[in-house]
Amino acid sequence: MMLMKKTVRSFVTELASDSPAPGGGSAAALAGCLGAALTKMVCSLSLDEEKFKQVLPEIHEIQAQTSALLEKLMLAVDEDAQAFNEVMNAYKLPKADETEKAIRLETIQQAMKKAALLPLGVAGDCLEALKLAHRILPIGNANAASDAAVAGLMAYAAIHGALFNVKINLGFIKDAEFCTETRELISEITSEAKKENAAMEAAVTKIFP
Image (cartoon, rainbow, N blue to C red; front, top):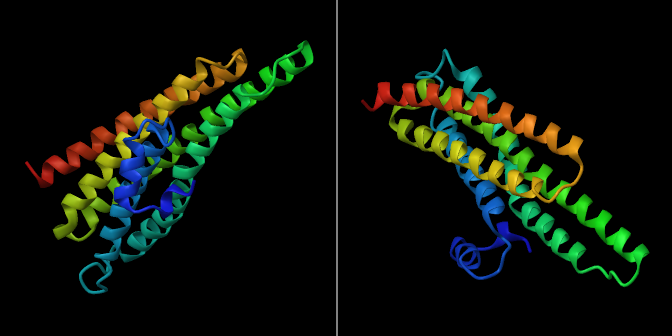
């Protein structure tokens, strides 16, 4: 599918079509990409060795970490759509006899688990992106403070969007232990994201009262 190679217009047009993929999972990953990209931009605008001398090592660190996250999230935009298509293909498997039914059911379950774990990973990556946006906000180029603020908002939205996609897939997974462990991870990410976002909002309010 290679969604990331499309123009913005063609991606949005496909997203708005009646095709079920790309959908919310890819959109959430893309929102994370935008947040990470904005944080990286703020870092790039904050590399003046005189103005940012005291914090330059931290800015370089944030920039490197954001670059790595951005690469992962760009891949996830396509991977989420691919995971959904794997689920759909699993449902199309033959079920003429008990053997075929068993193979089909197991394939569906494995595809569902993959479709749940992928956005869970996206949510974790977007949580890190939110933390990095928060870190660059007070030390980066003041003229780009609004960009850092938007980066945080995009990352936070992406976290919730990705987790919605995890939750909907859990409803089709019969492995109780897998579901319990995944829900615990969802709870941990949600709790940490709320705290980080509250701190980010407080920092933004100081800059834009």
